[in-house]
Amino acid sequence: MDKKIETFLTVCRTMNYREAAEQLHLTQPAVTKQIQALEAEYGAKLFRYDGRRLHKTDQGLILESYAHSLEYNYQEMQLAMQEKERLHVKIGATKTIGDYVIAPAIVNYLKDPSHEITLIVDNTVQLLKGIDDGELDFAIVEGRFDKNRYSYQLMRNEPFIGIAAPSCAIFEKKREQLPENKVKFEDLFGETIIVREKGSGTRELFERDLESLGFSLDSFARVVELSSFILIRSAVREGVGISFVYQSVVKDEAGFEHFLVDGMQRHHEFNIVSLRNTKARHYADKFLSDAGLLNK
Image (cartoon, rainbow, N blue to C red; front, side, top):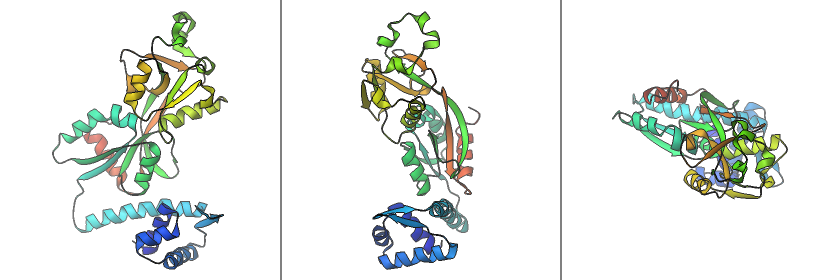
């Protein structure tokens, strides 16, 4: 792969010329010279400074997207030239999907002794970074991502619901006063809201729905942040607060009251995401087929 592209990607990852030079075992002027050569070649500025902080330009972002695909394809080409078949697939999944949606499929996939995988469960932001850095072939994610930047395929639409303990004050009203267990956000603001960490798809979607109606997390009596679904489920079941999760997290388990909120989106997408113009999509399709996830 063109050394200038390799240098460019290293600067993109570090956003610091000095750190990029150290990683590449080059001098800082040599790194600067290679970036300048790329800028001359493409007739566009790739980085700019805002004060002392380095930023990618719009053209830099475009080149970065193509460069990630080039880097991935270069590694695939090396295997092809050595006539080696890649048996190991690197998969990412957000916590809801990794822990509650595809776990049985992973087990089914591994029943074939020729299948080898690495599965990373993390939030959407970190998984997209893993795709960009070539650490993942593809990821199955909830939440928003730049659909112009990545190749993607809808796996399924999943119900997004509120959960509370049956003893929660919201449900002290008679059932007939809550058709379809539907409430207004204003009915919830006296409660403790339990959310995932920043960067998680679940939290981003919930905050986006709140903002669309003119509210924020600060509208609730108390905000508790827990990254573990096990802890979230336990806290809700014990009446500590309410939360919003995908239906797969609780399914039909006892100990939870399910509810909907007026004006809140009821379903969200689970998408398979990979780099554009690479063989990663082939690995994703093969995994879905072999794991029995197609058309589910």
